[in-house]
Image 1: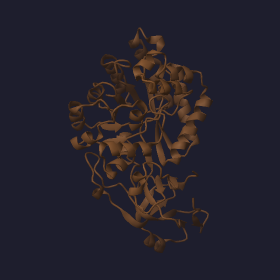
Image 2: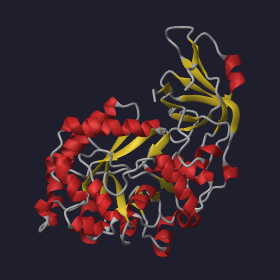
Image 3: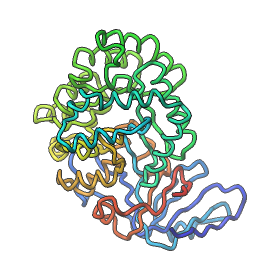
Image 4: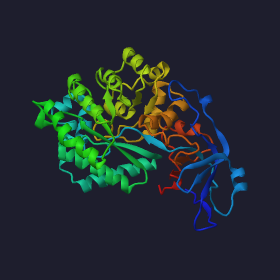
Length: 425
């Protein structure tokens, strides 16, 4: 990686210019819903970014003009190599806080067992719950930091992180506190999501409604008091939370004023309809969604989040991304990095492969991991490069943006910035 040449004129700098870049794709003038053509992409050449001392974008424009305007209060961060600049990538669905391993599950899947059959043998989520409960908060923090740093090396500047492997009040709170501690130790923003409704805990197997009451009285009040999360998730499937239980939980989340997101339509349908009914921000997975579910999602404000890592990990169909887009949905793409069904954790590779199989344009693929991913997290201050937003950015070592997806994740970022500050990769 090239070392930037920097000019410091004063100890207190009011602004900085960064560049030049062969191409900048601001991703700032794209609709949030529906299909995109590559011709829709705004591409600036020989351009730069001007950032204020808080890390927000002041301007995106010609590099030569920025140089000509520079004064003694301007830091110049100039690069000699050719690079293409994008908004920092956003992974809007991960489970990177966990303890232990599920390599055994992976081997069993390769031998022919289904996800449900492995779970019936004591594997699956319950196996990770046992291992995570035995992991200290400090160790969970360390593991989450390590995984977040790996994602940052792939260009992620915002990473959603779920709890869900504690499945007791104490363990779920310990996970959320570990996520908060990890967020303080990494440059990327870790967006915590409470997922106590991942499975029915063994201790409540014969009285699942009592678990939801326990969450209402002893979990969510602490989450709100300590500001551990502003979002909550639920896994809607008959082997996890059926429709009746899901409705109780969603009513609870809605009454607390938390944003709702849903693991929906992964193995069977029904979850996306509940997501629409209860005003969820996003419905994630959707591998089993058919024409009826797609049409309903297109009429709603729910973001459809595809998780190609789960399809690769489980050997199941991809989310019907092409149909969702053509119907008029907002499509985000996330890695679902977790120890069981999606162990890869490489969003760019997964997005590129989803694009191949679902015939997504480059514009649709890149929007799914930038501006539309930001919408899936309700973060209007990032996801594109425009005045007033955070200068979260990633540069790739090429002169042609098409190479980024063309190499299917094998072109790694040459530099990443968080709020205008370059990170060490």
